[in-house]
Amino acid sequence: MTRVAVIGAGITGLAAAWELRQGGAEPIVLECERRTGGVIVTERRDGFVVEGGPDGFLAAEPDIPRLAGELGIGDRLVDQLAKGSFLWTGAALERLSEGEAAVLLGISEPVPEDLRLGFRSFAGGMAELVDTVTTRLGSAVATTTGVAAIARSGTGYRLALTDGAAVTVDGVICAVPAWATARLVASVGVPQARALDDVLYFPSLTVSLAYHREQVQAELAGTGFVTRRVTGDRLRACTYASLKYPGRSPAGFLLLRAFLGPVEGDPAAVAHAELGKVLAISGAPLWTRAFHWVRGLPRYRPEHAARVAAIRERLVRLPPLAIAGAGVDRAGVSACVGSGRAAARAVLAALAG
Image (cartoon, rainbow, N blue to C red; front, side, top):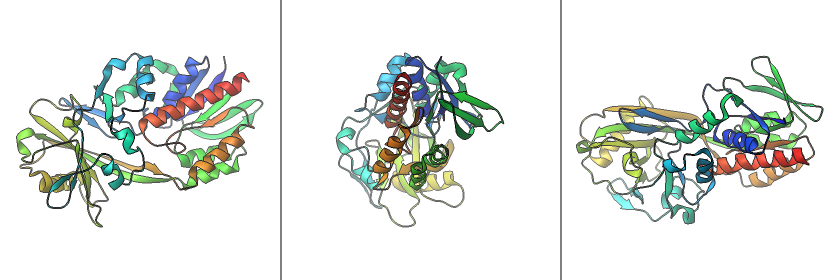
């Protein structure tokens, strides 16, 4: 059977591996971390569902519902409950028009037209998708197994692994961050790939905080709020997590998620203090959980799409090798699933041709 290595077990790589298997190839997923999913992390604590990365996906995009249906978990999808967002001016919360919050946060995508349909998630959190596809792929997924180098080998590739071993495959899909893809792809004779080093990854710091509902005196409307971008501001936005999707907290409790800029000291203490000013919170949180991604959401330079097209044009001349993921195509969970599956289809077509 044709073997294809998928480098990276984030949602992009997992989706690519699933597509390869559906197409009759044998995927070998190589992940340097101890777990799969990349920035998708869901923790469950005392009846709360806590997201460490993306908490949902655009309802307008079909990639995740399609994959969930194939995996047999389509019935686990849930719709967004609350809609709309607000701006904290420093004195009051003012309602924003659809899509305006994304603009204020510096997010160019998704476009407002897509936002009008809202978001969806999974009943048990976004990691349900990761856990299910990882289980279905079984032994094809190898964690704590990184790729040190790629080299041409006959009509395929030889991958040197970080544990000293090596594996020979007929094709490769790079589903890792842009800086790693740049190094690996450039090493097989595609110098254009070095341009991916220009993709900037902005840090992300979030804190989830649990409260008794009566601790929060403010009226909570919509999905949350963003703040005006003022130099030195520590609180960037807040999502009312337990009001946005069903089943995120037990009855009588509230789960908030604060998005912070750079802070000194304990981010949980900062989040609680800043939220208290806006939402009139009394008493301490029941517990908190912070997630810090040093390299979070990618941002692209204006020439990014042209550079990616040039890289892909050069890859056509090599044995089957594709690039995918947020560092290459659009950011967002749905976009990553679509990117991974498209890369797998391209490799399958090249192998068949």
